[in-house]
Picture 1 (cartoon, one colour):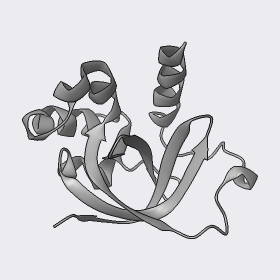
Picture 2: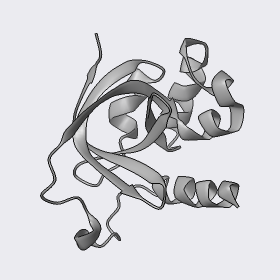
Picture 3: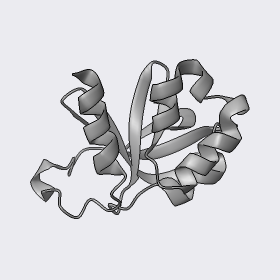
Picture 4: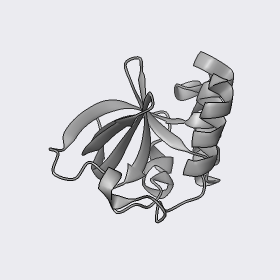
Length: 126
């Protein structure tokens, strides 16, 4: 059952802009948060475990992210699906940073066990 839920989320995020989402459900008015973690492509991370992340997986992750598969920020034991604050996919901004540690700032939303960060700023972590 968990796999079906993940596939639904992955499929929905791969569709691009979130124009169909109701604005009432967004994190309006909440303060932005800053997260530091690894840029991962969700498909390989979920299907290959630890082999689906890290420097050894960077080229594949970059290809998957550029191809439109969902992208996330792995922070500790939490995975934050990533979008841009303007409701566009984060793939273009994060593909070159695949498998790198990044510092992102944005609004974090949580629902049904899922986490998403709507990114307003991204930079490579030092």
